[in-house]
Image (cartoon, rainbow, N blue to C red; front, side, top):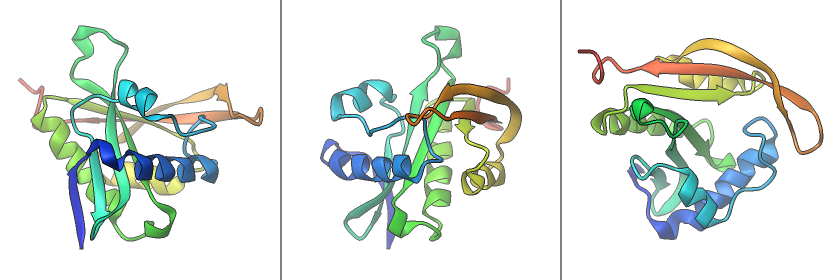
Length: 165
């Protein structure tokens, strides 16, 4: 049975392994290696750190990253969602996305953003299914560890619940 719950520090080793699977896949991030706990913890907002569990095993995670350090952007966050290789295609990404959207709105975030490689069609489809719209493409903003330049599709989702007054 799939359960979405709050992240606990003891989940990090499994979360890190799932993150590394995404990195190894090659179409998830520019990063070469999943960060150690301290770096990951500093990079993610305290709000809305979620894991998906199948029975007691963590099979996916979702978290928010803040935007640009400006207080006027406090309602804007970038999302990350990763699902273990062996758990893909089972609706876990969708469950994490829905839970992350609900959590973000509960915590006052009115805009969620994402940057996705154009080749990652499953992730693009998941985001668009959940109300994200493509706002543009950054052409070759960075290189992969192997030196390849990659484009990034920019998406955003404006809440219908928060920030509409």
